[in-house]
Amino acid sequence: MSSRLLVVDDDDSIRSVLGRSLPYEGFDVTPVADGYAALRVLREQPIDCVILDVGMPGIDGLEVCRRLREAGDSIPIILLTAYDGVGDRAGGLEAGADDYLVKPFALEELVGRVRALLSRGGTERDRAPGVIAGGSGMGGSGQPSDPGGH
Image 1: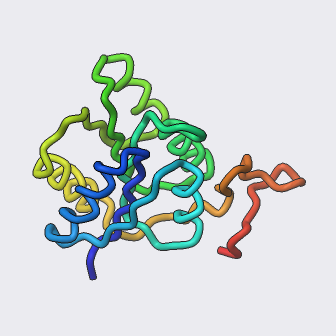
Image 2 (image 1 turned 90 degrees about the horizontal axis):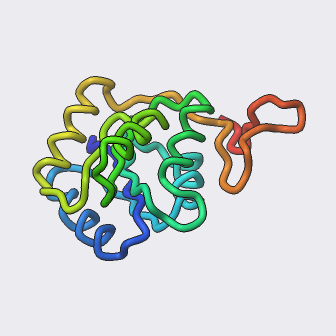
Image 3 (image 1 turned 180 degrees about the vertical axis):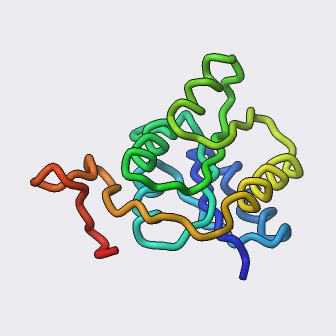
């Protein structure tokens, strides 16, 4: 079975190139354009690794990453960004990302990083039932909500 990747980037060209290229490397790809869509897909579909742009309108990549980690989701996350300062990289890793790749990047490097992360953790992950698109992920009781019944 192919590993399932979620590609989250508001840049149509990045989503298109990765959506066409990564299947040739043996991955199933679900491309989405924003953080809300990413959280929805992660709630509804089995995904093995997230390739996540930092700078997006609405919920940015760092916030998506934080929400997943706060909900206890251990899915591998690779941040993509045009920001290459040490502080930017540190901020991404502190938000819970597993790796950080500066744009522009070589496809071979991205594929190598994805494979390395997947080989460490396998393809199974803990679901993040408390992460809901547009919400805090907390139910009225202060406990994580479980909108998908997972």
